[in-house]
Image 1: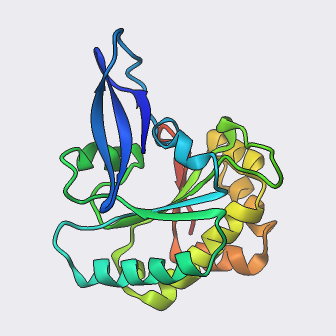
Image 2 (image 1 turned 30 degrees about the vertical axis):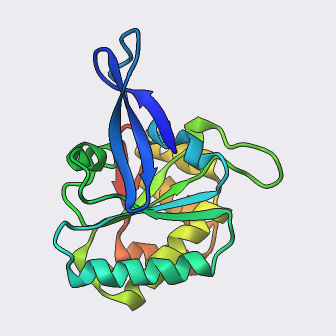
Length: 211
């Protein structure tokens, strides 16, 4: 499946799901598109049917951390509902660097949990309320117990938090209100995330790191 989004000149990028993970591909268009491209646009069709979208960017070296994270995510994916999607990005993608930049990731490995567009029932979340939580600290990714703690906490925020409010706090770059928004989900969730220091970000680059 591909999801098209504006690229540069007379072509557009698309997110293509393959058996080994997502990758960016060029799609020709008749007229020039906008140069603006965010992960929300790129993955829009994949976000429509889920409330949480989990995406792992592995290293290109088959490191122990990759094996550990993939194993942990396999277990997580099996034991969460269909409202959560778990995928990887193809490390052989020639446009891997562009994909990483969409999430403001300097280098893999990194794990991203993003809000999906689905809400309870048949409602859809507003695109302006989408945000992501990124985990890139090597010591957290390598430690399955710490990884489980931060993924569970981030998942709780994405499932139960007020996405409209959290996205608004991020646009204002208001760390105190962001902390309050996370604490509204649960004090234990805030304590876990503040300790493990993931990054909250909007499509397009605005971000705040907890902790």
